[in-house]
Structure formats: structure tokens, C-alpha cells
Length: 179
Image (cartoon, rainbow, N blue to C red; front, side):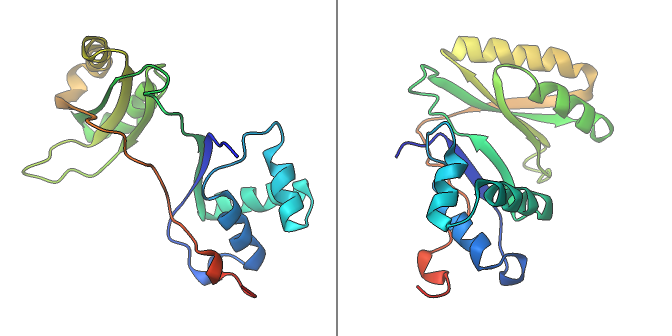
């Protein structure tokens, strides 16, 4: 079944989830089914109510077991051929405010902070830009630069050369009790 939404998890220790949570992670780690009510199908497979699935998902989000649930479109299939990770050296005291503003731009799919790796990597703000052409992407980067103003001390753009499969933590079905 097709999927466009992914559950992204980090390291999961055994004490963070029970057996049913583990089964829920296994059922959703490759993506949610492309249905009007994907959680209803998952609930049926687990033998619980859709409400319990949603409650468990919310609880795992709150506890940090699941980092996020989000759409994962194939930008190339949508016509976006110039996908570039713009990287920025931004003043630390303005990073949160400016990062939120950049993350709201329609052409930015995700924006996040990463630590600098001085002296070779001075960048602490990353924003993925999607465009049809490199020229269009660079125009978007110029918009980001204007938004950052004097808080920006430098930047670069790293364009995608191939599609990378995006996956998070994978739990094996064999780790489930009774399997």
C-alpha cells in the first residue's frame, strides 16, 4: 500500500515502550497507509481501537520516542529538480527567531539547527530549499539571506545529486514478544 507519511523515531530503549507500542512502531515505521483513516487500519491490525492508537502515538510523541510524523513527498516526481540544503552561519542569539521565520517560507521543507564544527564548518542553521531550477533555488536563497540580514555571517548551498532514501530507526519484527 502506498504511503506518504513517515513516523520518525530515535533510539528506543526497552523501558520506553511496551510490547504494543513496539508493534505500533513496526507497523508504522515504513509509513502510514495512504487512506482517509490510516490509524483505523493500524488499529484493526493491532486489535485495538483507533482512539487507543492515537493515544499511544501522542504519548510516544510526548515522551520523545517518536520525534515527528510528517509527509515525505518525492520532490523529483513533483517537478522539483533543484533541491538544495542552504547552510547558514547565523548569530546564536537570533537563531531561534530567524529559524522559525525561515521554516515558515513556502519553498523551505525543513529548517533546523545543527552545531558548528569549527574551524571547517561554521554553519549552524540548515534550510532545505526546493525549486524547479537552480536559478529559482538561488533566488529563494537570496530571499533567505535578505530575511537573515546582518545576523548572517556566511552561507552556502549544497545541491542534491541523487535521491537518498529517508528512513528513521527500524525495529525488527523478530524483536516483538512471541515472534
